[in-house]
Image 1 (cartoon, chains in turn blue, yellow):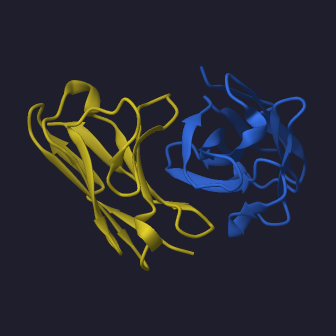
Image 2 (image 1 turned 90 degrees about the vertical axis):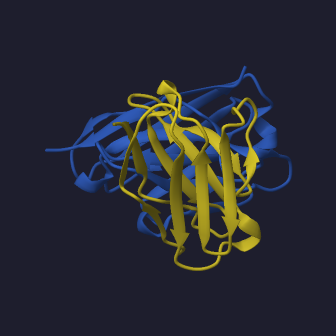
Image 3 (image 1 turned 60 degrees about the vertical axis):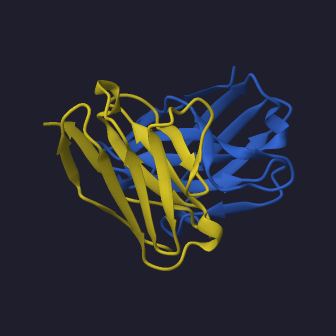
Amino acid sequence: QVQLVESGGGVVQPGRSLRLSCAASGFTFSSYGMHWVRQAPGKGLEWVAVIWYDGSNKYYADYVKGRLTISRDNFENTLYLQMNSLRAEDTAVYYCARDSRYGDYVRGFPDYWGQGTLVTVSS
Amino acid sequence: EIVLTQSPGTLSLSPGERATLSCRASQSVSSSYLAWYQQKPGQAPRLLIYGASSRATGIPDRFSGSGSGTDFTLSISRLEPEDFAVYYCQQYGSSPYTFGQGTKLEIK
């Protein structure tokens, strides 16, 4: 079965960096686009970024451009989110999620989600 | 960026009743590329509907979606106790892919 397990969250000071990981199993990771979606405590879902199955294309929400970078390692079946210059408003549970389309482009909506990892930005 | 506005913010109903949730887009969503998700406390979201009206695998037929352009609806025909949760719409017609702010469906 599809499994997505996020890790790397924790408490970090404003202005510092953090890298999140998402270990994928139960499907052909290299054939699917992948998303990061976040949820601030008590708030709604906020789409962060998507990466194509082969890493050739990446799209981001306007508010994260330049600070957050999505990447993947298809040999290790792992998705990453590099987070730099962190701000208090980046405090959230970060979910990795599989795009619903198999193959050469993303459809744009996730069909499987991990359980999330909490990032808290605080001094 | 397409802004999605969901209404109502909270919907209070009883089991067995019908629920109607609305999602309105700030501009037309191309090809009805709209999805609905259910989220329960402490859990990840679960895909219910995509393409405005297609049910995802394993979703009961009491859930249905409709709409096009800028106005979309999620209907739950006969509420079961497990349906009380928060529901989000998401448009994927153009990047950035955006979510609505959610509708909380609570037991009356």
